[in-house]
Image 1 (cartoon, rainbow, N blue to C red):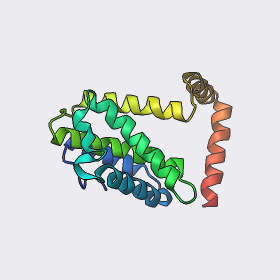
Image 2: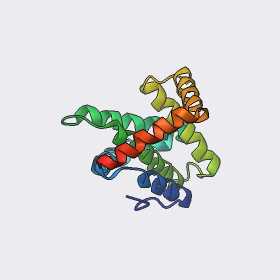
Image 3: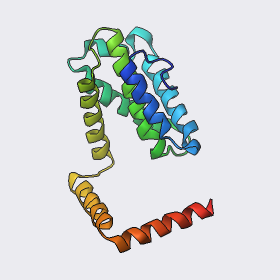
Image 4: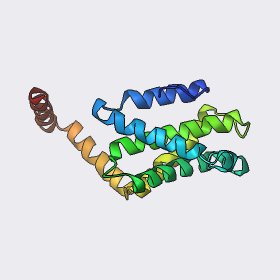
Length: 168
């Protein structure tokens, strides 16, 4: 999708950065979610989800919550499972498309600060939905720091990585 519909340069660059990090085996699921979300947002035209943004008092917050909710709706209607590693980047991509729409309709101007606010709101909401607390994050970061400071643990980790790459 990389910038196919997005006009704002900052949002295009952000979408491209997200898509570069998506593994090849996840890309199809990611695209299905993004396309499904865009269809949902545009359905019902001027009475649809995306068009309702024109009445928003906080388009950034509504873009974030709306994108995450749309992905949740798609997940509920999916046949089978929807992988989290496709859902999260797809939801963020839908946030970007919604912000671009909001800018095109003169609801806001997307600046680095606006994108930063949207990204923080997105991560806060995703973390809560995944039941990851700030304490969990702090604990995980503490473990990473401990490993990074211990040469023996780093050597063991690097050995595991080399062994994993040989299996491919």
